[in-house]
Length: 267
Ligand SMILES: Nc1ncnc2c1ncn2[C@@H]1O[C@H](COP(=O)(O)OP(=O)(O)OP(=O)(O)O)[C@@H](O)[C@H]1O
Ligand SMILES: [Mg+2]
Image 1 (cartoon, rainbow, N blue to C red):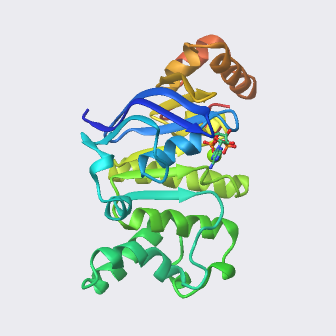
Image 2 (cartoon, rainbow, N blue to C red; image 1 turned 45 degrees about the vertical axis):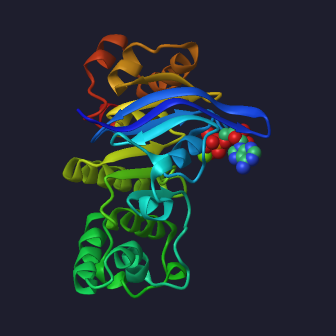
Image 3 (tube, protein in one colour; image 1 turned 90 degrees about the vertical axis):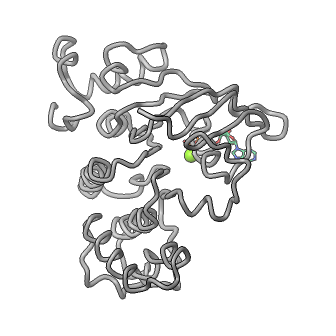
């Protein structure tokens, strides 16, 4: 597996306070990395360093082997999908215009092609085609969330950053969106970094789970490994909580393929 994103000795400080300390992390092409940790531990900061919205004080971030410092940021950022919690849609644009925004910037002459792509992405994220003309205020929270994901995907990024994208939706919509993003990942094989507060979601979606605390990596491993071999007390506590929810005995946990079976399926 080739490396998509590499953090080398990354340190990020705010007002003299170290937020991320000496982060070293290698993310393989096509990996679905879920990121979980306590509030304020640096998850959003880590994501935003990947698309250059935040610049570290020390260290290097490379994407497909290239230092992002040498890239033209505006163009570079358009190649990385970014979806965050809550609605960040352009309020004065309808659904179609929102999703087509980046593709239209990238290839102005291919409007027809973009229209087709918008329909395709709407279908993939589970939005009815007749919603194209609606404005964000005419959509439910879950629908807005889907438009945001379609917009992030529409630029055909090979890296997708998602910061608690399903935080604001109800349980049923959340489950649908989880299934959809998993399917999209399987179909497109793009590299995804997905921040969540929910350990079940992290274990269910990730091919790898990154557990962080106080700007440091507690463990970076496959869900099964996190469950069977928690590396630190912090990870152990997260996993204990999950085990209680699952009501699964030790032997059974070893057999359950978290990256394949939904947590709710094994409950
Ligand atoms: N612009 C800023 N100036 C000063 N401190 C900041 C700034 N942005 C973030 N921080 C601090 O950096 C730390 C990490 O913030 P970050 O947003 O990465 O946390 P997080 O893990 O995403 O938290 P949450 O789970 O609550 O979203 C926090 O202590 C936060 O207060
Ligand atoms: Mg955050």
